[in-house]
Length: 228
Ligand SMILES: *Cc1c(COP(=O)(O)O)cnc(C)c1O
Image (tube, rainbow, N blue to C red; front, side, top):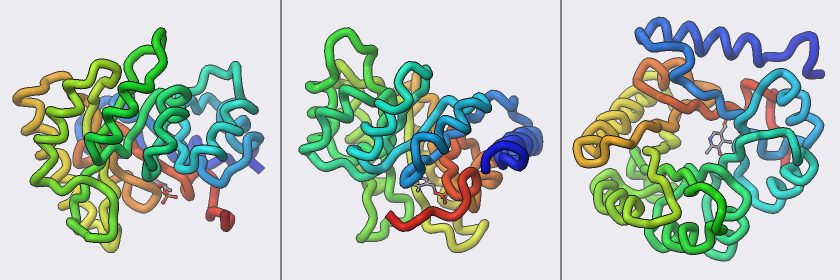
């Protein structure tokens, strides 16, 4: 039921309001529809309403949907953990990868990016909470990894991504602020970095106030996720 009561319009209004609070232009934020576990027809319904950017976590599921939606001029973002044996298909089929947290994976993505495609857009995933269980490079190691990724020929390093522990708006805000400060430090030596991928369904307004340029929304757009 995507038609009459599509949340897309409300979310776009919320994004515009947050941009206004932050004194930013509405087009400074890209809405990434996180479509893991959603069917190709559900994605098509959003695409029919003008949604172009889709984020996927599971490779095979994503490839099936890409095939089903071929010809629609969509932008595909890989946002999940990356195993080495998945890099070839990710490099060949995606436009963006938000979840690079090791140089080894970045090297493979660069080597495997097919000739004739533009460089693969990449964000480094940062573990802002320093939780042992989560993916992402620790804040202290971001600069070194960024320098390594920036040197790879077939990748375009665009910025940083994080999934902060979202237990309160205040906790999210301080994590977002830390990520924004880290990007701003990197920009001293890499002025081309322009992307802060942060903010999900529960906290995207706060993320935009703190400088997010990409917000990644699943539940807010599609409703609660079915079990996979
Ligand atoms: C699932 C997921 C999201 C979307 O989460 P919601 O809370 O449903 O908006 C965003 N980013 C990443 C990396 C995810 O895996």
